Amino acid sequence: MRKLDWYLLKTLFVWTFVVLVVLISFRGIADFVDDIGDVGQADYTMPKLLLITLMRIPGYFYELFPVALLIGGLLGLGGLAKQRELMAMRAAGLSVLDLLRSLVKAGVVLTLASIVIGQFVAPYLDKESELLRAKLLHQQTILQSQHGVWIRERDTFVNIRQINPDGEISDISVYSFDDDGDLEHMQRAERATLVNDRWQLVNVEETKIQEGRNFSSSFPERPFSAELDQEMLVNLGIEPSFLTIGQLFNYISFLQEHQQRSSEHEVVFWSKLASPLIGIMMLIMALPFVMRDIRSTDIGKHLMAGIFIGVIFFLISQTLGFAGMIYDVSPLLVAWSPVILLGCLLYTSPSPRDS
Image (cartoon, rainbow, N blue to C red):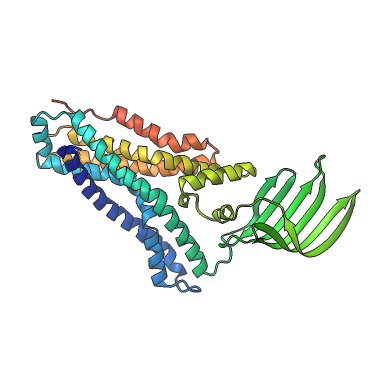
């Protein structure tokens, strides 16, 4: 890398870091205040809440990085413009394209660092923080709903209503159908445990239907042939954003294989793939706002306009994800629509003067 590349990288890093500290602080305080009402319940103490909030910081980092990169780029380049350094670079024969190349190189380096944190650090700590919170509050299940989770394996349907943080499942119903689609076998179990990599149903009520007659019986234990991955079951109660791209891909395949709705996880999967590109594009968008009227004393107005657009874009991209799931829009389109929107903004943004 050239001296200019290193100089812009240092400037961009410092300002992006400052912006991230401010944004993460606000985000962390908001979650802290939201959870403080649970302090005092069971083993949930103030130090534990502080620990959980700290564990969430890498997740905040990855979530806020694209907009922080834009604002950091605006502030960093704005500082160079204010100190007449950009003007000196232009006077020395450096073109806007040269600046753009150096800026993109710096952005790629920072984005790669954010990917490492976002894919290897944040998901693990986010997941552990949620499990720790459930444990401290003595929440016995990470999933408990009226209808539970439905899983299909060929002609057998499994309904699971409770999943514990350790992967044990409770309140299970198994329905088996014949080739004509008629119910022929039903099981209800208190819970299921994994023994030697095989599931065992515990306290089972079993009903067989033959020639219109029901034959019921009870068993302390019965083998359970369903192929259920324990890690996948734990992930059912974890926010999709807490999973890595690899975990999301495997989990989406698992849901689709068992004919479960996977749109929420697909949106997060494609969004994680699009996030690095969004960060680079937002950084590129900073350059026209700084380079336009570089000699003007009103450069602050351009900086504020860029920051405003960045914040609005961030809010819109967050809203699109929720709207896409509500209105059943293609997850791929929902996740990449911010990229398309950014492309339109870059195309219509004011062109910097190259003179």
